Image 1 (spheres, rainbow, N blue to C red):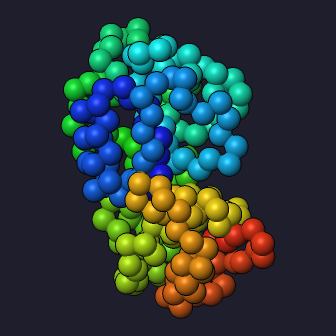
Image 2 (cartoon, helix red, strand yellow):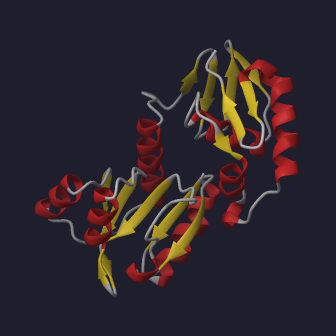
Image 3 (tube, rainbow, N blue to C red):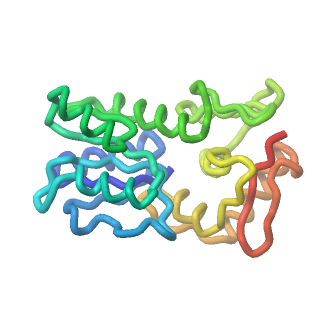
Length: 219
């Protein structure tokens, strides 16, 4: 999954990108509020990690603006401000979670998975779409209780579709989300992965919407 990190600290930003990549997250990293997107149209972030103390502004201002404009992307605040009133203000201001620095990256990754799970309307670590089960942390898949052998890229693709079952996900969105560090995967490669997935889980479960993208059909 592809995420946005807004954090001014060089060492922390680099460490986050490296550690989260091992957890299956690719990322774009920005260091100033002024560089943050004004609009998220055409951008495909699964989650935003937002530092409150930026050199040119307060992260809460960005949070408030995005929520007032209807941006629904999950946002986790990262800050050294651990006071109760700060946490309450951040959560009441629209953040989905709050983590205080210094923190363990494994805890952050776990919080990210929890937030993404809620947005996908999944109640446990095992994502269930009909008789298809996906375990994001372990890259395991099962169909009707039987293991399905998926490559890492195939699993990532399935997870992106499973975030919005019954909704068409464009090829451009899939392209940006799938590649580590955010470099696009070409559409031909996506088509090949979809073909292979259909052979493993059943062609009827992934519907092609010509000229747009693909949709996971809940079965």
